[in-house]
Image (tube, rainbow, N blue to C red):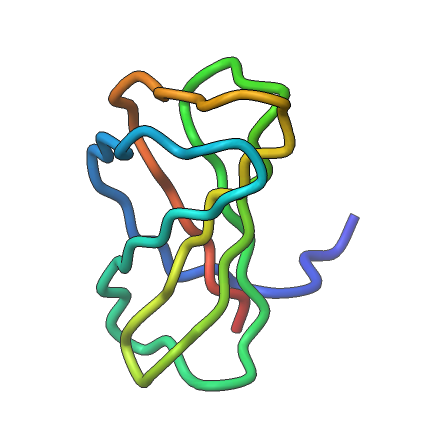
Length: 88
């Protein structure tokens, strides 16, 4: 299968603060070469079904990751590896 895009990656260990029910927490990752409008995929190395992770290029070379808590109570995520792939 042909490759449709190339990725430039960024990663770091992330220890999120406690996220209240229905609330969001954000962080940024530096990804050299990321540009406004690029598509971004995000993954977090933990098993958490009540938190959704989204990511976008918020400034040149900067990806913002948003963790949204969809549960009925506060969530305190364990520390883990946060990775982003910026599609080029």
